[in-house]
Image (cartoon, rainbow, N blue to C red; front, side):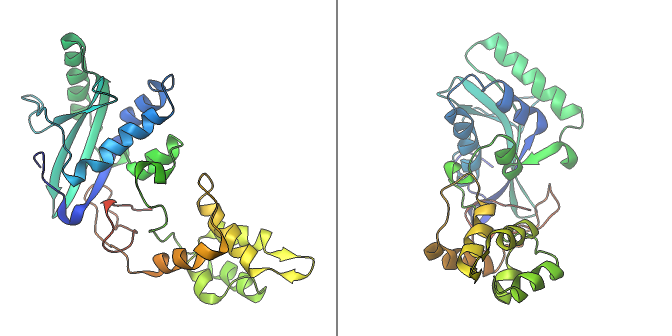
Length: 253
């Protein structure tokens, strides 16, 4: 993929090396809290055609660098189309202002490439990195509501429905943790409180963002009920669980 190229349908699998995630956690800790978000925003936008402008040469031919943090740092990454799916792989982060330091970053990238760090087991998807780095999904321009989590066990769903907290359709769209939150918060001295149960369930899914209210619950559930993307991600070897036609990075869980 060259600068200006878009991933098919504008959706991309974004994977970060464990080393890069550790660098974001350690090297940027002294900077403004928005620094991590700035880097992740830039990575998430690569699939939209906002690629780097500095293709690397041998022995890193096929890789590129993306300037971040006011062009004071750069990320070494590769953008490809694999089986019709856009894949962004980011290796490491380092300063770009000094030629000698930049060579050290290239050496690090070569070592990571040759060490097996590109195996799927050694890579974290962007969504996992968001949680590790305590970055709110919405702050990097991603919709945290357009995925469908694994359903809760059938017994939990039946219990919530039998208690009058949720209807069967709603219960089928909630995860184990969400139904547990609904059961814990949905009963009051006067009996079941379905609205409170639903708000508690959805708040469990979005603990670090603005809490949802009852007016927004129907729209959120409608989004979850929509058809899934289902695109197989080449690196994760899992199907995307975001809604069909979603923008930005794919998500496997």
